[in-house]
Length: 448
Image 1 (cartoon, helix red, strand yellow):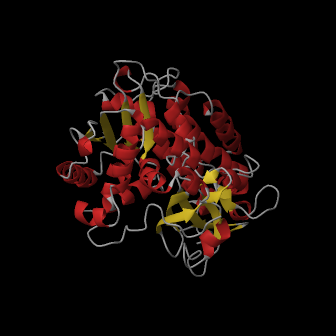
Image 2: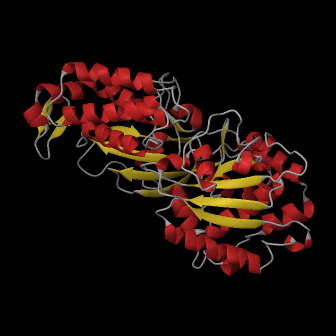
Image 3: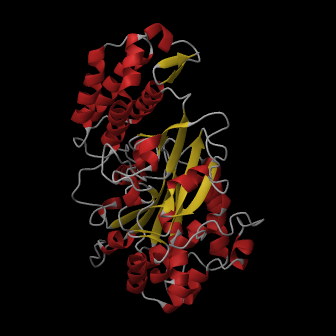
């Protein structure tokens, strides 16, 4: 496993890197020249398949395989859509990438669009980030003025129009088919699948939807080759991964790590998070954003087999639930012993109830029930039967909705009860103490 390789952030702190001139001096747009002048679209797709890169938006599906599914009927346009609707609580790495080095995403969009035969592509940005929209639009104008976008790019005969579209501030539009509905000007409700977007996507035409981080990797793959990318990382977790780190840690921020990095090193070394804040200890971790199962500290550091856990797709999910979690979108949240798991779970449930599109009754009704039950437990009105009720409701939601938002709402609740049931019971048995301002649950006692 190669360590400390920076694919996305090598030049991110270079003064002026957000401009075309400085980005070009660091080797920017070399991948566009190589791809368009020396490679066929099929050769680019093959290099991405060789790289083994998996979708960085959360699902972890192989990117090259997704590209190869794209239908290519004659006379029908094809589209590439970049999912920049980053709304998962605890996740902010795409935002960081777009505002800091926008031309990296633009270059990735050009290379990827050429590979997929798309002449019009879209970047769908979270609606609250209008200043990022303006940054991207400026970068697009600079690239167009330099001949890397628009008509007849680099004299190749290939045309590409790139459009930045702000979203409506709905978390559900991070789901690819809801995003496509929103992009078409409709309410962002997920679509039933099949047909999948690769066959009938935007405007009922073949479409690939990829995450910001996924697309931003393509210039490196073209410049260095898919085989070289595959040498980075471990096993089927190839390359690097951006991690949004927050919570009770000394060094919050965005980190580019080589996949396969030991979680202990990531959590405790000064190069990365620097450990839990002084005077406290790690209680639990949400490894991949609010939608993934929470893990207590002892399960976070060790796999089901007792091996040291790694920051990779396979290692974090080792053993499945209840001993594993998911790398997800890389939204890493560390919680020390001052964290009330009941309050945290209720807060997550409030989010998912608010963001449910309401199309599927298990999610529409179930997220509301979970929020209400967690509210009454947290505020001193719960009963012991409420705990099993929450577990039952989460099971009724999981796997029974059109899109994964139902699973995202159910997993945090089910895993919190699985690992911290005694804390839920304590809230019910000691309602007045558990709801005192500043109360902190620590094992069998409350510290106020």
